[in-house]
Image (cartoon, rainbow, N blue to C red; front, side):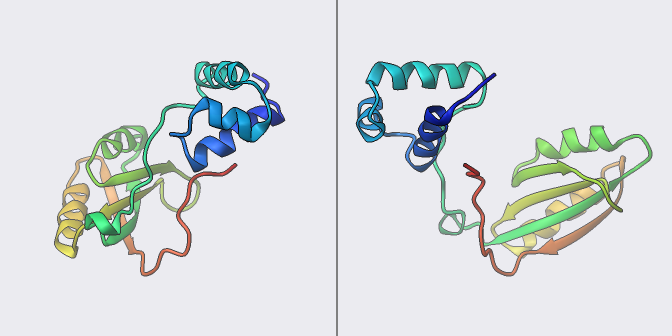
Length: 147
């Protein structure tokens, strides 16, 4: 699996606008449309490009609260808890971490009541030992486009 500078340029451009045509991208990068298309296909086949999606403004959709929830699972149940939590609505990210807790969950909510319901439901799961919830006051940066 080797990607070169041209692949990286294609990826950077797709992260900014995944809807742009291969022709437009080829003109921007100074390479042929066929080259752009074949490289995108290669990147998809390698699963470097997993899919295409829109970047939404969560707050304009009513999701005003972001919570970061630490979870400690009962002995030997971490993987099971993480799989279950990853299927829940509102969950944006689930991270298996080092430290005093096992898992970090990032989730978005429309209001405090929705967050409260979620945390209570999470805490009542049989394999969850403990949770610790942090509410985000201000989002300084939230962008998972790393290239």
